[in-house]
Image 1 (cartoon, rainbow over the protein chains, first blue to last red):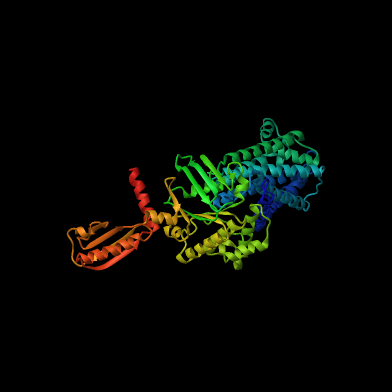
Image 2 (cartoon, rainbow over the protein chains, first blue to last red):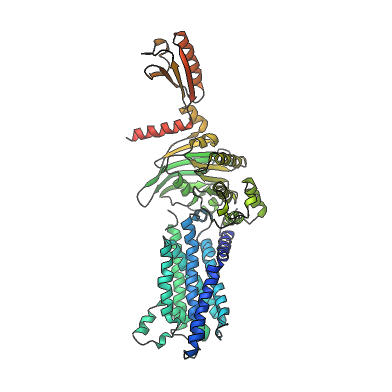
Length: 257
Length: 317
């Protein structure tokens, strides 16, 4: 058998990771959808009804991109980090390391599956949102591509996290203590433009604000920062994460002794 | 490929862990096609590190590993596709079903998911009836078989078994030996690490002894037994002797138990010692020395192993 790229190997990892998500459907799919629905009910329907429109968008609709981003970042990062951390923790990583699969197959398998789960979740959340809020997406194709880009980038980030972590605590620290607060403070529930100085400048030091703003632009055509900047930042993040993973595989850091 | 042509060549393999521990020290080893090779050594000798270096779990600090003519540092995909590994620990996704776990392993190594082939592997390991069970529901012995099934899923030509019978009961151990023998019959080359000498003695064609990251000896089991084997006989004397009479002093003997026992240690692993013991008994009768009992035994691989390790320890001191 001649051996170049091992497509079957990548497919095996990918399908297994998706099967794992189905096996834990309550935790990986139902739970985030339920949480986001509660946000829609409380902030979108109850509180949102009393709020003024933001940048010409009804408040309930305004918060959809931010809430979507909140779920997307948390879930893709967690899924991907858990996906690679568990084999390390249980010792089943031996099989992956001894197989003819390299960085490309591993990333397509683990990161691809995490990104797919993220996209699936995003789809379910957007459908769920229609039950609570009226909204229309101005650039649906661009929105889909941007969501895919975010899902892929943070799945890569999660993969790095899963390799870096040497315990379950570390695995949870970044999504819970960094990503979630930054997303909340990144303009999920308000427009950064409405913040007075110096808070406006402080908010713009938060990279997640650029992502939320970018996604909001694809939904409603309005944003706190230019879309080019959001897109450039996301692409840059994707490239950095890919480079770090390539380095990890080259050196075997935390994978091979 | 000729029968004795090596399918795995290891030259100058060294592994120094980040803490400074030298787990492998300039190891040279060649494995022949179709053989069962037993790597013996005490805990911490470097057995698992050696396997890890070949299978891609450990990054060697130096040396060259060639498998099936492929340099593992460059053509690792082609080489790994033909190598299987059964790890020492029961490491597998316990919530996965047996069949899916084996199917996953097959796919990981680039093979299409042929159900018939997977079922054949499961049948050969008496796992077919349990194919739909979650691995966590199986007994320890069956879990170990699942690991073997996973390692065989891609039909490897070279299979590493790291302590395959560690912690399993006698019945299962013998069952495992049968499985390994069946693999050899199918043409699979097997390298197993063990510290059960009996296991190596039962199955191996060749034996390598490793300690402190160095290979002390590699030889055919039969040659090793012949070269280093001994016959030991203890004769219980009717009357104690204060010294050996000249007529039997040519035999390798010594007195023990206050002259009540005569110990013979000699011969080699070919049975020559037994003949010498027979001659000794005749000489004793001729010399009028009566004895009431005789215990005779050939040295086992374990004796050789222990003796080699203690010799090396003494040399090091």
